[in-house]
Image (cartoon, rainbow, N blue to C red; front, side):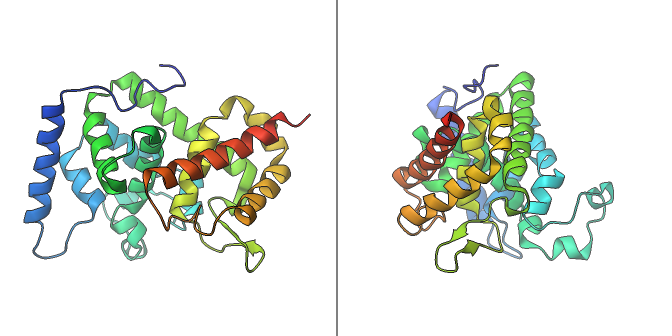
Length: 245
């Protein structure tokens, strides 16, 4: 499988996709009693399979969990999650898994539609056709990308630059993480160079926040244009840093 991602939003029968999305809508309407499931919990129930299992695996990454403030993975949690874990909505409602899904889906932001939740649903439907080679490619892509992002940002990973306080935010932000992950995934061949120029990347990132409209990287708007713009801006910044002689 090549870097362009043959495991993308593959062509498949529209009727089949619509059928699966209809099933999800029915599931959501029935999900009215007791504790209401999150969107990702519903996807986990409906689209279970090898791709979904891969999502559950990659979010066990130490880098990923540290960045999002989730305790490091222990095999014990697969059977008996701790009260601390269950008290974290990011973990308990599978938002961490959704963040990983966003990365894979938004590599194809040119096909973005139905809003963010609907786009993730559509990618989940189409993931059913991914081969084992596709899934292994995506697993390695996630691993290599988050490692490079950490090599560059370290403890600041996924944290926006606060232009008012002139400091890095204390918490990571999902929309910014989208741009970071998709951007770095396109620059893995330049990984060593970008890691060596981490200070330049961080300074250039600050300038992105300083020169872009407020909310560009923090997800106040999620139209197709907004999503594509923040990914393109971060990607272009990395290209500029990599090309400095």
